[in-house]
Amino acid sequence: MDNRYLRVEGHNNLVRDTSTNGIINTDKNGYRSYVELRKAKNKNLNRIDKIESDLNSLKNDINDIKILLLNLSKSN
Image (cartoon, rainbow, N blue to C red):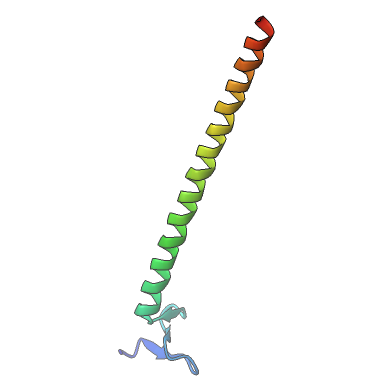
């Protein structure tokens, strides 16, 4: 590690960039795990959104069928 970075006391995976004074997490495995978890959550959210959309479409179709049946029964 070059002298631009200083270890943060009490944190093995954190360093301070002395030129910007920012804290940098050096735990690459932890970051990869976070990214994979975020991708999985987004995939599940997209799946739920699609299911909700399909359900709303089915509700509309059923309502249309109901209206058609009511109209048919009135005309007889």
